[in-house]
Image 1 (cartoon, one colour):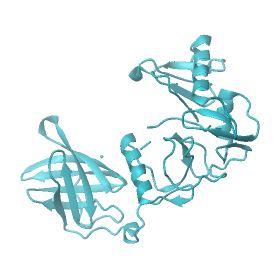
Image 2 (tube, rainbow, N blue to C red; image 1 turned 90 degrees about the horizontal axis):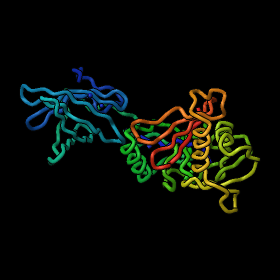
Image 3 (tube, rainbow, N blue to C red; image 1 turned 90 degrees about the vertical axis):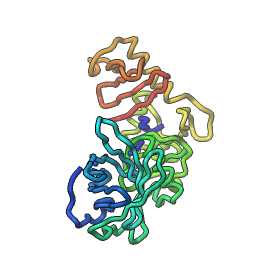
Image 4 (cartoon, rainbow, N blue to C red; image 1 turned 180 degrees about the horizontal axis):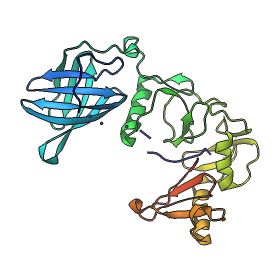
Length: 304
């Protein structure tokens, strides 16, 4: 029972460069190999640059996911070809679709000094107070690839039973798949809650509780459980209902009352169909709570 919205969570590049690489931006530099060269500039996780073969140059765009640069080269005529690249010191290993890997060497500068790399620390991400293992980082990077996003370094919490997750000390921001091996056991105080309503052992903050009560009504202090399918109940007891179904019912009530923009004095409103996803609706109560129901009947909600 957290504030939920499925984000299917996570995870690009043409400038000329000086010979000095930027500290902490390891893909910045010029790399040369057999038959061609890449000139890249990294800013955060975005990479821009040019690919050169003889007198022909083409723009490169890309984005770093984990330790891998995923990008494309824009070819004459509007076509593009995708590639991945990894970096080990001054050696860039480049892989285009349908071609074997090729190595390119950095020229004109030493490898940039990345204090995290030199200490072997890598990405600075903790979940439930535990530094992510290599296996957990691989899982996270797969989620980033699927979502096209990237998780910034920082501290987070994750409820493996429901899939709810957020920044440490804050409310639910995203609904991930349940059962992922990410971090350690979830502490009760991970989201800074003081409401006395515990879900899967997490003390809910006011934002999460308020969003739930707008769907389910008044929730008394106590201990509850919620699974990734939306079923919920009192701790140790059987299921009392399904949260996604409750959101869908709220949507149905709103449709029966008539679609009105911005609440219009009604408790609920339907703000319209989502043209890109067929018979899908978004709506809210005019107080910052919004829900989304897709064409397959899956419902998600978020509290702003």
